[in-house]
Structures are given as structure tokens and as C-alpha cells.
Amino acid sequence: MALNTQPNLARPDDFYEALIDMHRDLDDAQSQSANAQLILLLANHIGDHETLLEAMRHAREGVTDASVQGAQTHPLAA
Image 1 (cartoon, one colour):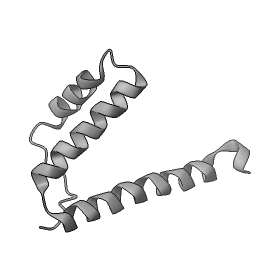
Image 2 (spheres, helix red, strand yellow):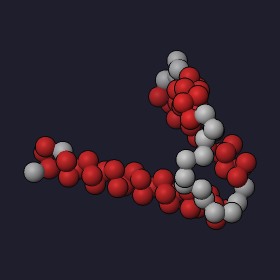
Image 3 (spheres, helix red, strand yellow):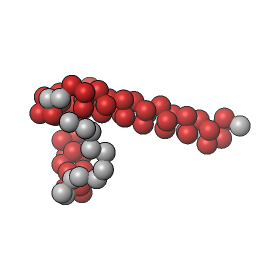
Image 4 (cartoon, helix red, strand yellow):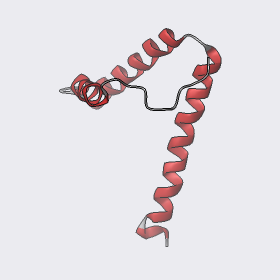
């Protein structure tokens, strides 16, 4: 199963609102725990090891790319 990186949510705004609501009134540790549980539930639902590895690669690249871009545009980086 190939990872679908194209927009695929039928109701993206509703999903985002529900995701924000999931974190409402949680402290940082509880919020991180909720995220971890959601990731594991979705990983179990996907089930395909290669697809999950590809998703992890994309997620990590997104973080490291954003860090590099942020450093390049940060006023202290000059």
C-alpha cells in the first residue's frame, strides 16, 4: 500500500476542529500522550509496515526541513 500524500480528507476543517478539541483542557504531558495514542491507533488501522515507514520518513523530513528553513529565515541566523 503506497502512502497517499494528496489531500484526502472529506471534511478537513471538521477533522482539524476535532483534533484541537481532543487536546482541550489537557496539560502538555496529557496532550503528548493523546497524540501518541492516536498515532498508534491509526498505525494499527493502516497495518502495512512499509506504508508506516514511509509516513515516518515524510514526517521526519517535514520537521527537519522546517527547522532548516526556520534557521535560514531567523534574524539571528544572519
